[in-house]
Length: 413
Ligand code: AMP
Ligand code: MG
Image (cartoon, rainbow, N blue to C red):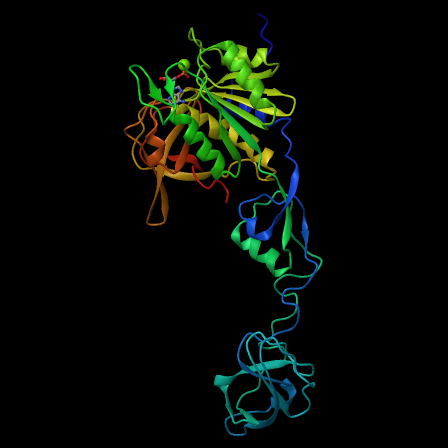
């Protein structure tokens, strides 16, 4: 068989091969109430000012600064209170010479006034207010547009709608918003040993744990992830499952059967289903045996059956492409640096992915490695919140070395 794809790619090469050619999915309109976590598909240009008018940030008196320019303890100035403006109302008349308007927090500053003095700094009766110090013109006035200025771009397509952005959209009067639809990702678990989680275990069988973990990761990243029924180690069955899933999925992830064992059929099955293989195997541990492929617009990734290896490859090879598919403009993962709390004594000739836990000690982020961990385990990542990255060609790491890491959960929200 002629092999026209790279084998044993570098990590960044594998990641970039998956990224290349990925375009965001189509868009849809959702109500702002359902916007949380979605990816904005339009630039938002503020069509109004926030606040919409000059307003008072406190309860006090709106007045003309020049009228109290000479006020002092010895020579207080008394102004006539002409009316009261609660929030939501507007003054009936401008503030004239030696006049003041009693004004509440959030109420518009009346025409004529150029300063607001808070109650606590005055003496007042119903119709009079006395001031003991001058106020600078403009003091205690929140200007229209100070928060958001009409005409400014306040968010861009590709931004994640986090709660604060939802707040700004609400402030600008967006009951609906254009977002990218959630990409559909189908997960096919392959392996004769697998049984569905609701079934009893027969001798030699294990539960299909990886699929549920992968589904949940994809959901946490805003995707619509669905689990396909388990497929045995059979090239034709795998091909058929791939073809079925590719009918509507934006991405198909498989687990198992990506090595060189006698029952590893995922790669030939992908080829038989008409996919172009982008790479097979990446220089990383765990997760080395990973396949990247594509058919038309559909991204295909063959992950190892080993749960820890599947997570590692899903993160460092696959996630940037998935984020791009989702429409995010920050598809590369944010990286932090953490200090190794203990020595890591293995060398890393290829890149290494380490499950770790973030602990902040005296303000410094520490990376706590997991003692009890191996590729085939499902439990290590459940105790972790960091994905540690040891660059290729690194020797054993001393305690106190810096290690780069991605956040395992809520990536980028
Ligand atoms: P494979 O990638 O098919 O060589 O499988 C590697 C290891 O992962 C084997 O021990 C499998 O039994 C195990 N495995 C495969 N698929 C899954 C799965 N969906 N959930 C949990 N373990 C799995
Ligand atoms: Mg297998």
